[in-house]
Image 1 (cartoon, rainbow, N blue to C red):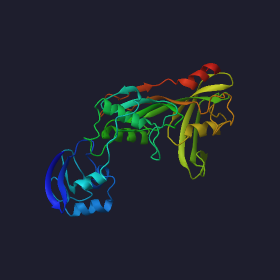
Image 2 (cartoon, one colour):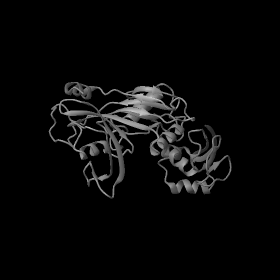
Image 3 (tube, rainbow, N blue to C red):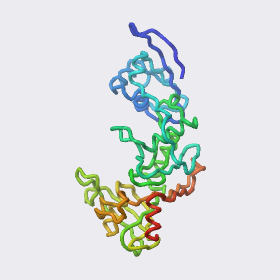
Image 4 (spheres, rainbow, N blue to C red):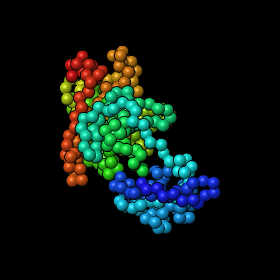
Length: 326
């Protein structure tokens, strides 16, 4: 980033800041790039600055819908106070690190513990996997928030707070775009382990439509809901229960929990969709673990192409599994 100082506003030092577009920012519209670069600025201010040539691309007048390419230079001529006021603050490197199953140039495959959020809620700070990931990447110097203009590493898939297991972290914008595309096109296979009540005899494929039930944090079947599909395979039987592999074809909120309850096999410990009182007093959440991810064939990312990543459930899941002999 090059800084050239000029004097344009009375009583204030103004300067021209030139932002070089790298691969993480390439392919974005100019206005979208600026909104990420200066998230606290009103869109009207940004559009006005473009029209008045206080924001240019490669030294020339630009339009808000111009597409940026790698190597372009976006010049912003604002006062010091304006830049400070509208810029985002870099994240701190302080915090816990995630448990890493595998790491490539573009991805982190992480193992989320039960009780930790996938990402922050924005209301108040709580421990989450995105912040753990960023802390790790800053510590290993794989990510420098001061050097990045708009991109922040993030997770592609999300798990409920009380569901443990594998989460995909994207270290690059290109990795995040592809991971989101694979999930959207259902090319990335996701499998879960769970223990359900009763004996599930055969493989069950469940298709329904789910919507949120009023103000309650639970899902219900509805003709107006979103299409949901899952495949549930019994693995072993134990004391009045079944160890099940759940394959998510779609990824709706609470899908596995609602669908298994809908076929009379609620997840052990799931007080929202199953029994209100658990047979295990120390268990206060559903026994559900994202244990396997299978990546599609991809020439863009050979390090993960057709790779399978596994995570064995621990903690209460492992203890109760042993107790139930599954």
